[in-house]
Amino acid sequence: MTGKDKKVYAILTAILLAVAASWGLNGVYFNRGQLEKPVFLQHRIEAENGAGSSFILYRLQNRTDERRVEAIELPGIEVRGTTRIRHIEYRQQTLDGYMLEIADTESPAAKVSDEQPIVVRKADVRYDDGSRETADIGEVRFYPPSAAPSDLLYAIGGGSSNRNTGHATLEAGAPVKILSLQSPYLEEAAGKLSLFWADSGTAYEPFDMEQPAGDNPLANLTLPKQVGKKHKTSLGYRFVDRDSRDWSTVYRLLPVMTVQSGERTLDLRPASIEDNPSPSESQIRQFVRSGREKS
Amino acid sequence: MRKNVNLISWGLILTLINLVGSLWIGTLIDVAAYLMVYVGASRMKGVNPLFRQAGGLALTVILLSVINAFLPGDPEALLAEMPAWAWGFDLLGMFVGFALVYAVCEGTRREAEKEGEQELERKMKIGWQLYIVPSALAAAITPFALNFGEQLGLTLMWLAAALLSLVAMISIIVGLRRAGRDLRFDSAGLNES
Image (cartoon, rainbow over all chains, first blue to last red):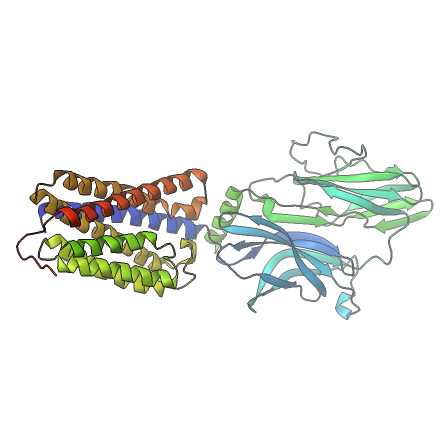
């Protein structure tokens, strides 16, 4: 081998090392962005334990994981079906929202009360390859189902926007006064959630939508509120992340509204308040990395 | 000797037109292609030590191609789906491939220089340089797709590098065909078949 050949092979070796460094560093960076296993976001969900009840559980999974979720089961709760209804693709992960439909059940486990709801913190995930795993989901509180929709105040529609705002439109069957609104998660959601009456019909902006949510989610909700017979009112809501990790806690509130009509006072749950997480690429990466550092 | 140079150039042409390189049939085509390079280069080992090296490198590429066919996962797999050791084989195969192209180009260039074929000498020299720079660049860019996705800038840069590398390889093959036609390869130890 001549001196020139040696020089060329030395250059080739340098190229190999540079290419290997590029591959190696990219490989390390890639591996640091991989979840060790699929994770559910931390949920704070209120739901009724009966037919017609449904809610969404969000789950983050590596894109290289080819398994597909066939069913999500909750211990003590009869789940009728699992349907993927949201799918967001990120560079290394996918964020999927699975809607769980609750079945009507007469089992003893279904006997719950508002004071002592069934609280579920784990879910069993069944994959298309037959494998299963149990995962932490946060918290889902199941209340007894309503016997029948109330004729005093009932939902007739609703909607949400991609800015994580939404509304539930309610109609009164008789003149009512809404006295209060309560949920066990209101305190925890303080600073993230704002509730307000959005009665203009066109906008949810009774206040500056860009400002952070205050410490009291009900601060902009004037109570008591009168609603005339066959009149409508809209309960608006807005979620604003308190910090860059806040998106990973997902709320779904079914608040109790105490409603007075004449001499009657009733506790109803006519409206649901739904959080729709849409994290950015960098928020996902930060979430994955902090999860790896903790484990 | 012309036949041997043509065997090498046909081998290289076969690697270029092997568009199904990642499938089983593609591996067979690759093996056949590098076998032609090996046979051609081995028969010219007496002409120039670089052809002997080219023969050895071609054999290594054949071995790596066969191993690659048994690597786990989908043959069309992205780097993300391959284990780290399989990356090592990919890298090694790439390096040996570069070295093989160098040995063939430089061996031919030196013969052209000996026989006063200055234009051919320059062609092989520039062909090699034109080949190695974009090929190495494309190899270095490839794993960035893992972390930065199919970004337009990266994709365009990779495509430009791959295209340049292809053009350079075509130029090298044209040079080899010309060498087979114009050079006598009459060095000591000639091993004409």
